[in-house]
Image (cartoon, rainbow, N blue to C red; front, side):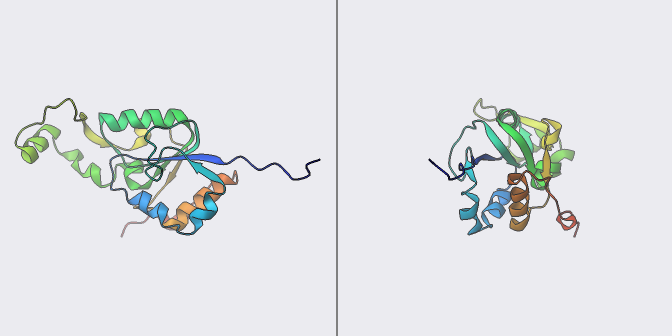
Length: 177
């Protein structure tokens, strides 16, 4: 007779980077050796960390970056459909961040100035008129602020989610300096 308790199911976590700098993923990796502890409790689905390009059903989805083109919107919607809990990570996902600095410019004029002509290639995603935060397109469950959020904030946030607790965000994550 087996007297050992059953091994708890690992949570499936997926990450995606849209219009941003990839700094949030780098900050996530800055949890360093705690990654070994984390993988005892989770398994990664789609993520640059796994090189898996499509997302399957997941418990937690972490999105960094805003939406600057039609492909970003398509990827985000598909990602949302597969994630039970969706987290906007960092300033770009939450408010558009630095990429949104182009929002006061005309996209056609900007492309003309940069490329000398407006690119017309079906392989290029159609740019949006303005960079959008992800909550303007899909419902988010949580926002983890920062540019990028510090590694310790990632760690605590994930610990809270894995334990079924409401994540407690420190007030110092949002500051203007």
